Image (cartoon, rainbow, N blue to C red):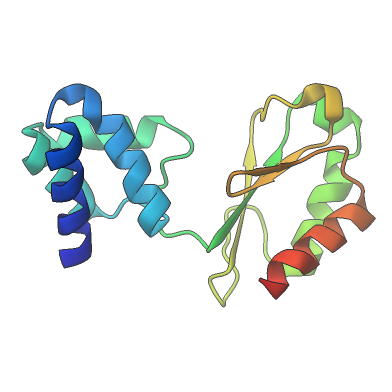
Length: 154
């Protein structure tokens, strides 16, 4: 917790404690820690002089602000109609088989978390997925196998 408290304090000194700094601060914590712990949410509330409910409400509203621990690499598979029509189920099956996890689970080594999201905005290049902030499009099972292999080697 001391590292988080320090991060929050540094951010507040640099950017101020106005309400409009809440979302960028939460994003920075996720970038550093990979999720928002209860302690970090309480510390943000205290630092920005907001209610814990307001901070949690903001954190839980946004899909990319994780409030539970996730793996080092968060895989988000698009599940919109465009991706579904382009064999998204086959891509999901490939990722799930490779990592031996289901949607919503994290590998035992804490390296990968598998999630499905409603849309990544890459419909014209479906199927698509993101690993952290990196987008992969026009996926095939073979392409996914190679991508996962590269991430395992990092």
